[in-house]
Amino acid sequence: MNKLAEKVQQALVTAIDNDDLVLPTLPEVALNIRQAAEDPEISISHLSKVIGRDTALSARLIKVVNSPLLRATQEVTDLHTAITRLGTNYSSNLAIGLVMEQIFHARSEVVELKMREVWRRSLEVAGVSYALCRNHSHLKPDQAALGGLVHQIGVLPILTYAEDRYELLADPVSLNHVIDSIHPLLGDKLLGVWDFPEMLARLPGQYLDLERDSPSLDYIDVVQIAVLYCHRGTAHPLANVDVTSLPALKKLRIDPYSETLRAELDEARSMFY
Image 1 (tube, helix red, strand yellow):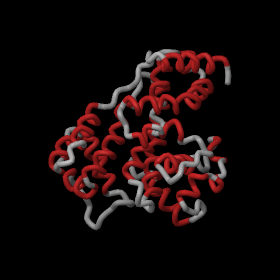
Image 2: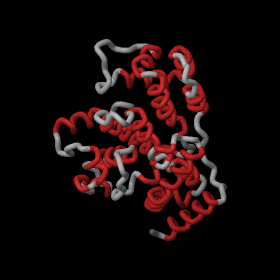
Image 3: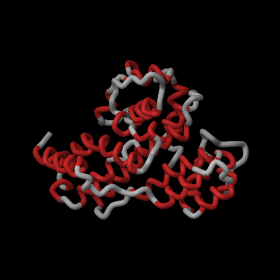
């Protein structure tokens, strides 16, 4: 690691330890959805009202319901029907995940581009995670998708920090070094602050541990394989990983070379766009 990356990393770790780092807050609409969804008696009409306050989010959920993986015989054109089709729990998890896009905004063009790139990859990983989960009844596809949407959430505070430090913005190699080494730690911290469920709150810090072997298949395994799948054919170091030897893949019980599976996963990549 070069000098600048090392210096920035030390400064960030100190700021994290001292709680001096400004962490993004969960969007208000996400808090409202979560609060509404915590009521076991919630009606579809009430959840529709809460989600419906955000028109862009409503449109996204309707689009998800009409995606090839979920498409029913009749096209869904309104939010109430979309939530009826998905169920309240399912809808609220996806809505909370998709609303994260609101915090991926920056003042500078360099950071804005980087944030777009991170969010685009997160959407792809969420779609593939969703599809990978469908044959495992003890896991919920909506939770897997939420995991995919937040697996790189720790990149946000680093990019916000970089916006005020020109020397870091002007040196993409150093910036990428810092992102790679610190975003897992920050992601765990953020999801903890946001009160995410335990099974997802540790995901950012563990999804890159390729030797991790949990007793049974979990969301970290699913997101790990989805991340590796989405890097296939790119110049990223993760593109060269031999997935066949990974504990996560063995637990998923899939054939990574199956053409049918590849076609399904490729379709799933655009599910949340």
